[in-house]
Length: 457
Image (tube, rainbow, N blue to C red; front, top):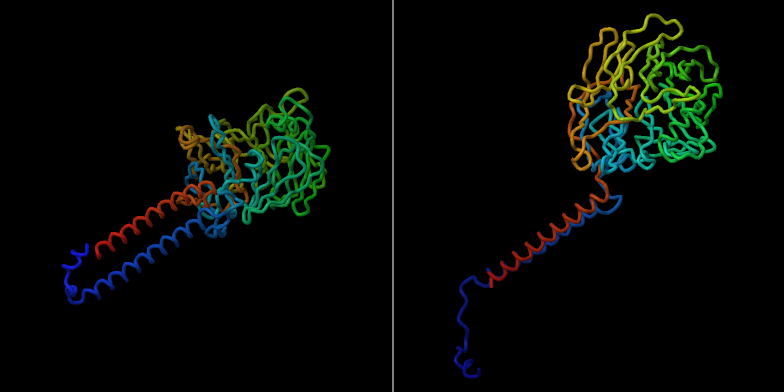
């Protein structure tokens, strides 16, 4: 080694002109690029973690502001597991409440509300927590009232769709409950209640529905005070509908609709033909002249021996009709409306909104003019193979419309569904994937910087 170093010149060869300045400039640029790349990747990772993974940190989602006219999409969106809940992202007022899904292999039913002011879809998580009980949508679309079809309860839950908040309304000792009707002014709710006793069907919908259908007594709930008043003379209450003034009520017991005021005073009755029942919640015409009846969905009112199962929460498949009977000699009723699966409300005294099934077997909503029978399709449901991970048709059940919004209802072209923030589990999976991608990007940038430095050397 000593001999080798002895051969070296005393002075190193001169560097090319400007060499040192070029090397220093490239080195500084390399350091800046590395710092900028690292900072950028770090900022992206932090932002993704904050938005997608950290609980409670989300882009703000405001309920849809009421528009000049409520509207209905001309096509309801298909099934999606990425639909957010009312609690996490309140939707604002709704035009529809319905059950959607299938349970052939997996229980993947959803309880959904659809916005009246935009293409907003939300799961009603309060209903899912009670195993999709029957419920009522307020006439103005701002609230949902639900009980529990699995057993006796001591309260009803009132859900505010604008805030996502829940209000517990005590109803006394635990009883089985069937919700019957909501008054047009939004203040009163009629429901039937009965004590539940042991049964092989205890804990099932059939047990609660059948027991209350056979023995339930009518109660009137004043939502402004939270107080329920029992009407002992109306038993067993089957279906009910408020008059347009919200001060009177028709309740079917057996094969007659009893008419009474909010103080419980009966002032008349209307006979209902065998095999038919007062249309639940929407059976009184807007002009107060007629009651609408439909075929029994279940086995009819309890007659002392048989009957008592309503089947009101069943899938939309049984095609029937709507017939009309006059209230207290109100005149000649309109002609019967054929091919109806459910009567959902009234646009006016001369037209109704119904659910029906088309020739292809798909559910749709239509407006029917009374007298002439002219129909106009308002909206269609997606009942294709999008449920149960794409293996089953989607079914619709327990469908309600915001009846107070129907007179001014418009039909809008369906846009992209606004389903709200994704659920936390999905967020976490996607967040991990994006963080991994960001890490790989950072490694690539770092490797490029290293290669650049080697090139300079």
